[in-house]
Length: 396
Image (cartoon, rainbow, N blue to C red; front, side, top):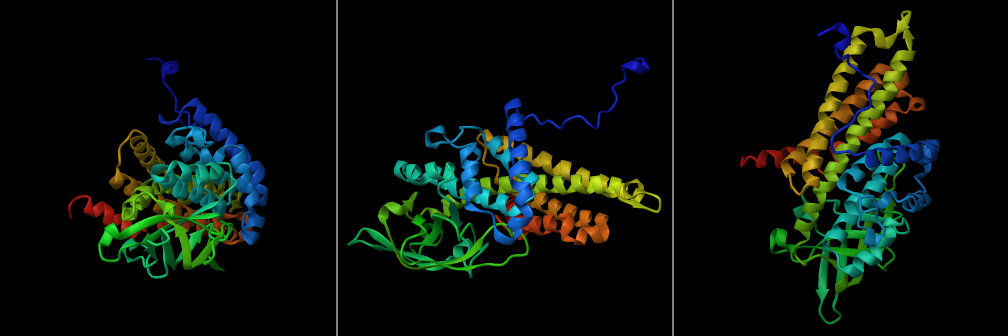
């Protein structure tokens, strides 16, 4: 073989994975351009004010809220990979709070309604949610029950005479809780039968007795609203039950799998974005007469981070392929989410270190990336819970 025939490495070539088509690439470019033009200029402001409801309406108009949702409810009818593209490209807006609020709408609250809801429930809530006209939230966590879903105390008691349920309880750490029109609420309908005693309800947030008690202050994700909610003698008709009475625990456990995989994709994309920003900084920042990126200690930091990001991305995409093709790979989804969340936080922390004092300043947005990414090791399944899921999957 002659020297001219030797294939040389092309490190600048565009990344391409087999799960994505040209249509996905076009969608990716569209969302990225929109995020840079319509989200990024407001990201710093929204850290103080939270994002406006109008941005959800705008995303609905653009078709971003129903990329993988059925066309009969206003969705685009795309595959699961299109939802990964949205999660990845929203990072270019540099507003983790917006990305989280949108994920609750599209990948946490909508899927159980589509999977278990009646036709009337889908038309009433999914159709306007996809259009950005209604905002959804999901109510699982309580002041005394988080990872231990079985410890939920919010009660829904059936009133046979009026064919309705009366709900009492509280929920906390509810993303979109201050702005939502509807909450997909996890309740206990029978306290004596364990996991068979939970039921989901679709509860309009303007009903008497639904109280938005408090906006909660957080370490990161400042652009999103997070609420403490109370439910005091809230009356809902029996038709508000989502799915089957007594099967709510199983319904919500199913929902968590898609949510975790989207979270994993967002974690990898967040890590990649802060990596890219830091790489640019390292090439421009001079110390001791040369760019800080040219020092071996820094160069090796980037090599380590890049390797970990690529490994995390590969696992997310491979697991997404299985999920799209009908598998239910709970073990691998748990692994992907656990690994991606850890890598994202590790990369963000290393990027702060490479920036030095500048990384600790708000001006560069690196500290915000760390604060925003940190929730991924807690939300949708803590590291500890996921390790338990993985461990038990081996009959341990």
